[in-house]
Image (cartoon, rainbow, N blue to C red; front, side, top):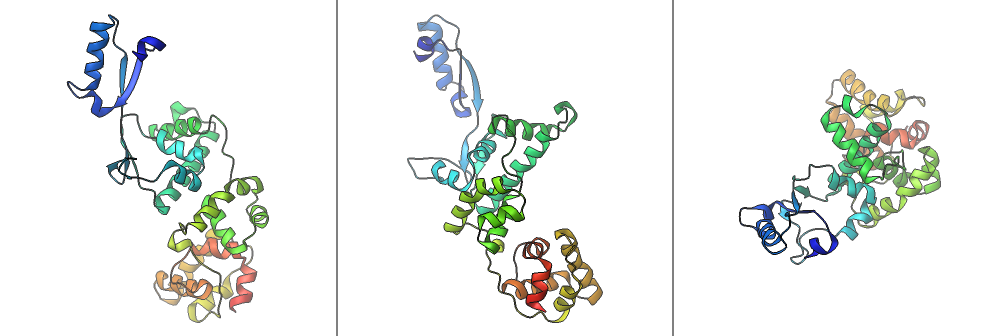
Length: 275
């Protein structure tokens, strides 16, 4: 009846409605026999799943959209839904690590869209990502540059949004992401490796040797690589040296990537605190 009243000619439904003798077949029969008109064109779409089970509001299965959009910008949520092919099921498992991967994927898709490459010349997988990004972001460019994890890292160190925006050279982007980062912190949603407090102590052994060799001009990658080089030079496993460095800086055996952590803190500051 609604198809007839509003004069539409297409209707989508979940794949289960298209089984033989299902609701779509019933709709088609009614339209042909009672309305004497061509049946609406049908198209199938997959289910939204929550950890492998169908989302069900009545059964309380799933995280509500209201909760998800407090943790992720709405354009990222739309990207998650638009990226798969129409008939694919979308399995949402909203752990902190999975949401971080979604943020990283979204930002990577933004880079593909901004590259200016002809869509016909890039792989199909990248085409899908670019198209999903453009639809999710209404054809606009991304409104932040700094990776979400970097914003999370710097805010835990400095606790000041103006300072974080200045250090990451993305004041507007950091301002935009700030409410989401604060929500992650308030809900204790941060991955364990990124949940830390800077509490340096005097470095010992190979860790002390490593810190002495760090230079202020080294970037995050150079610092990270230095750990491997000094572990090799001292004849110990890199993971053991990483452990020593983490214990020296944050009192835990694991944490954010060493290079990014030391770079964010500042080499001069770290050397002053641990030497």
